[in-house]
Image (cartoon, rainbow, N blue to C red; front, side):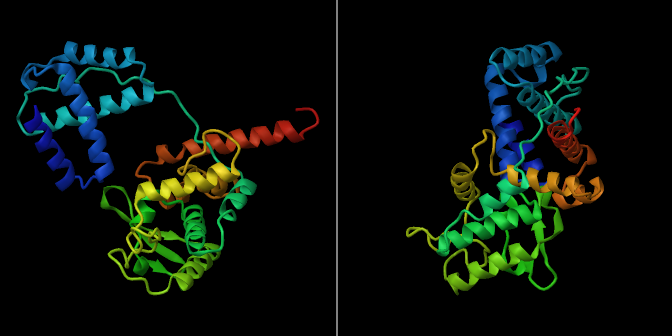
Length: 293
């Protein structure tokens, strides 16, 4: 089965241009499935065997959303095997997708965002961290997109940056004056710093890795520090800045299609979850403010 997995991952890399994070997730899901199948040849797997596997996932206590993701992985994998002629028919055919629980994203309100952005110190790491927070909230980009950002991709005059999103798709993100000012203040204090990440907009300033490009994990640790310092609610994560960006735009009258383009969503249905968040917030404001609510 491992040979099929290698071919599948190569297909996702070369033809689909999937990110390393996505490839890791596919590899993990399929490796666990192969373990459950106990070495049974891929050609002998049938619908009943897949049903038993899905039942096993539910029995382990996984969330419906996680099971749905793993089933989607299996569908894509067997569709590839059929297309390449390794199997005649997908055993996933006819299996219904589990209905995932609808979970609304957790967002920060505008006052919480202001406190979060203003929380870093005014030294070099602090200026960098504030520029990171301002950029994420100003553009709605993902943390993975931010760490890949090079200096030449930021247009300080035009107020935009070119972001490489999922699937290697590039999009143009407007970026606000406050974020650009924070980036300039960071770069002024940073100066011409040498190192293997010198083209990167955001660099590591720790003694052992000074000058290297920040990693996704490093930025998440930085954000989690300030979130813990300023936000008292549970469920707030680095991705909440992206959720807050989209929700605040809709709250202030932006249309859904524009938000879809800004977020880099391929399908409008992915963006529509933020309309539910805005409606919920509107309802909460109504119930809090109206005397006869």
